[in-house]
Image (cartoon, rainbow, N blue to C red; front, side, top):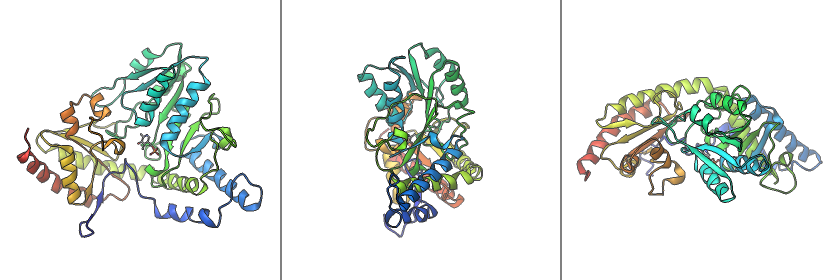
Length: 386
Ligand SMILES: *Cc1c(COP(=O)(O)O)cnc(C)c1O
């Protein structure tokens, strides 16, 4: 991008920059404090202490115990560990798993693989706003069901599921409940006890921490197998020398985000609602997702007669980074499985655009988008073949 144009990054659901304070906290762990946490001399011990401290910090943000936090390489690995680990450890109890049609690919594709291994998967429908119906969930549970995996907040349309209600149903039927909370962790309050969550995935790079690190919360009563075998790191749940610098950075990022969780979510909700209100004034524009039960930072619209990719390109020329689908699939031509599940046609899906705000997003940034977007859409519609 030409450095003359100012850059407005509105794709925080895809990834976030590492916070400067986080980077500073990580720095000593690369070459000064490089000890292996499994060794016994003093700086190995220091690494171990830093891991323990990080575990405590992260556990605290969701009301868990430190020894219920397993560090992984990110959200994708956490999702894989939760699903495969539960599936294989509980095979004697049943082979049925319930999830939804709008999960992240890390869940959907793991489920598809599990189907090939003989597991039966129910993919629950969602309504037009992206919500699952808890009654549908309850009806889908059989005596073969071992796990329910429903994401907390959707990465594309921002819809927040009634997690506590889902947790209650799972508890009643004695079924494990996993939630992919990568988009909600440290953005909206989570309490694993109150919400009856058995397993929860989170990722560092969505909350201003480094990439390549995440965690899986596993309630101490859960029976689960590891998917990586080796030197029994992480209570035997995830072998491999710990990424100490990454983990320390992740913990710092969670601490910083959690401290400002209320202030930041209120601030972003205001900016979100302003942007939604203004974009709604554009003719033939429709909000995707739920009007109120949505992430404080998510705005997703479809525009009739506009190509999302073309829109993205024009915005990029003006220094605005947005997204047409989730980052992982933006090079695919297939319409988003999430937008399809909420009832959009392929054409509507391809005319959709997502903005996701972050802690450095200002009101000026939003005003800039409000000023530019209608003009770009009008000009695209003039040249559109539809
Ligand atoms: C980003 C994301 C993931 C994957 O996390 P990584 O750390 O990038 O592997 C999983 N689930 C959701 C909802 C996400 O937004």
